[in-house]
Amino acid sequence: GAVVSQHPSWVICKSGTSVKIECRSLDFQATTMFWYRQFPKQSLMLMATSNEGSKATYEQGVEKDKFLINHASLTLSTLTVTSAHPEDSSFYICSVIGGLYEQYFGPGTRLTVT
Amino acid sequence: AQSVTQLDSQVPVFEEAPVELRCNYSSSVSVYLFWYVQYPNQGLQLLLKYLSGSTLVKGINGFEAEFNKSQTSFHLRKPSVHISDTAEYFCAVRTSGGGADGLTFGKGTHLIIQP
Image (cartoon, rainbow over all chains, first blue to last red):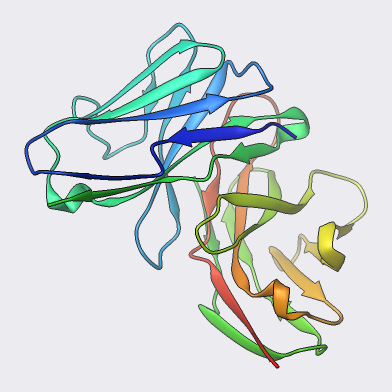
């Protein structure tokens, strides 16, 4: 399957600042990537679908101006959390669509906003 | 829209005993079904998937699952668990057919293997 990396694995930022999370498909050209959010002891919630060369599609209730997604190439999608607040603290996970409707997940990025 | 219910948030099992993790789904359209495992501080790994065909699906690490359309269930089973199976298990669905749809996940079941 596809190998997906995320950077950083853990980031701490101050309230009001912005933080960028990278998702890379290391061995697979991904026209579509997904961004999920996982709160402690809870499930993954789909935030948005990232499409290479076009605007991301956001799920209902997700603020597109707060969670900026850029899918500039077939191997890189970035998620920028703007003006972060403590309630944005979470585990952010990206995934890539592989063959036969499989999704390959990155290891996740833990964001802590102080 | 679809939803996934994993009734058991935590399942303790003795080593070498069998285990079943339950998953029920709700959807107005046909779906594909998946089980993922998440080890501590790691990403999700696909255990198995049901797309079509035989309702009994075999996956990695000795796991299998059975799709039951009438009961809208996709329970995960293993006849004999090992300490290394301790992890969080997620059931997920997506609509069948083409298109790039994200997954809808259940809340997860924490499988705890006791020696």
